[in-house]
Amino acid sequence: MIAAILTWLSGSVLESLLAHARQRLDSRTEQDRIAAELAAEEIRAEIAARSEARKVLLAENGQFFSAGRLGRLAFVLPLGLWWAAVCLDSVFHFGWKIAEVPVLRDWGGAIITSLFLVDGVKSISRSVRPK
Image (tube, rainbow, N blue to C red; front, top):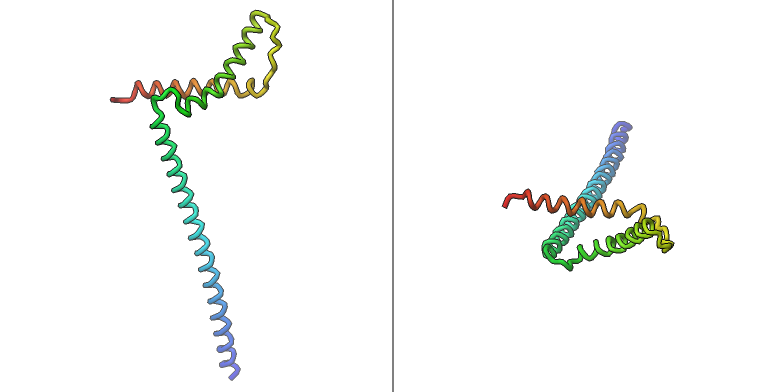
């Protein structure tokens, strides 16, 4: 009789423990599935955004007043004017007292270098590309 009661108790307890374990596993699997779906959706959104950006770049290709070119000019022209003023004042001692702009001094070289590198590599790739 005691053996039957112990078997019955252990069976029901064991079944409830197994059911709980299955429920936790299903819950964790569902969370992993949702996370994978979110990651896939994020990747699809990034691909779509890059595709749209590529369409804009292709549409602007060859246009002088394109958004990309105007954006670069917005950085390069003030930088070029500042550097020209610094050089002219340094060489000819005009006494202009040009303000020191640490951001332009720090970032200016990187902006100009990247601009020349990007444009140089583009022109080289166009000339090397088979037609």
